[in-house]
Image (cartoon, rainbow, N blue to C red):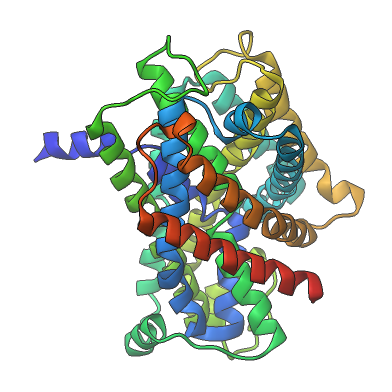
Length: 417
């Protein structure tokens, strides 16, 4: 039994890590606000969005595994230069905003448990993340990320401390609830957009490519190379498991916020610190601590992934050597971009942008670029030069195009609003 669990744990990889990183502090803020403002009404969206998440992430994973390079490298090799410039610019800018929002969200949560100023904690956490990323090698980082992902189960445990109304939860999970109200629709788009964040596409493709290059160091990158059928199957179930894990955690965050904050004096909560403080007298000390622990774990997982995906994009754009398995001396430019993304994120409050504003602009930028990226990923996942004969199935293509239409409609709505 123990050997089987070890084998299962070892087989988990980019799919699980990507899914867990989707529940970053900024996403936790969105889910908390959704629960506090709308109660259980949005639980159905997490069930509804799961097939679209699986489709887009599986396509991204297969592109990385079968070509040996990430999305940016494949766009550069097979598509117009202007497309890569637009995509790279928006992704890097959005990730920097997201890094800033997440650093201060995590520092705020830690400040509730440790009496150290938030700005000091933000710097200390950033230094810890930089040290971990530069000092550890790829396999060690992956193992750390997998354990950090397990910390998100704190939200599942916290929800059981509050004894929610499970009948209403089941009802709102299975039966869609629509309200023709601007606030409801904005929160709805934020929830769906958060589950389909563009940085996840880039991260998973790059990490699947890392795995392939680890196993086959001499392969030609950004060019189709056959992999064992069993490897593609592992990638598919790892991705499905990761996306399911992501939405289960999101599901319990919404439940926790809905059961404790909705309809009360704290219903208009707008930050994670407010949410955590509000939970303490309502849900008890344990739920409060678990909420904070989950938030800290999610930040330690998501921030290096956000900064890392920006570094991967620029490394592939400028043909730099870029790998989490390389030392700083071998991949200096890659780690400089990683460091600059962290510093820029730390500097956001000092240029007059609050973490909440950074979160808003991240959502806007991601929402605007997501439809274009989804179309490009669908095309790449069906391009024989990239994936060979392993093109996407009709079902996956159908889900991908439907995701494109949903995100396009949402982007138009946000622009008009």
